[in-house]
Length: 143
Image 1 (spheres, one colour):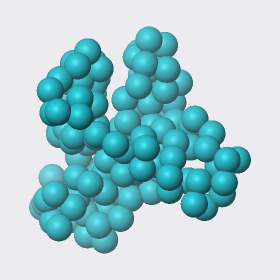
Image 2 (cartoon, one colour):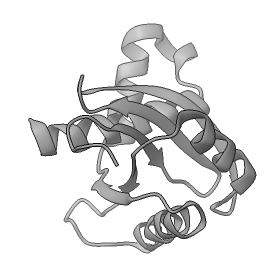
Image 3 (cartoon, helix red, strand yellow):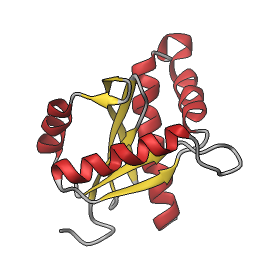
């Protein structure tokens, strides 16, 4: 296991129909959108996730936690926690969670700035949301 501050990260924006994925590096403090995976009522194609994990070999996984604006949990919070626990249980990766309030709104704003309405495809929004989850996790740890 690499030292904190020098790890590669993978972030997930959990959703019932789509799960955004991003990669990041602690050493540079940067993250990039990777892809968006289809999900069926929150259940991903685990073989697809395994393939991505094997290809990228991250040191730590960060799963966004969708909380209510007042910080309380909702059904999606529980589902995202369960998804993170399954990532750990199936693949043995260390998983941490990050409050993701407003990341979808921020992702849409960022994409719109760079490409107008055409840039706002659902899969791009989910991947950029995962990127923002990673960036905010790094800011809270190293900012």
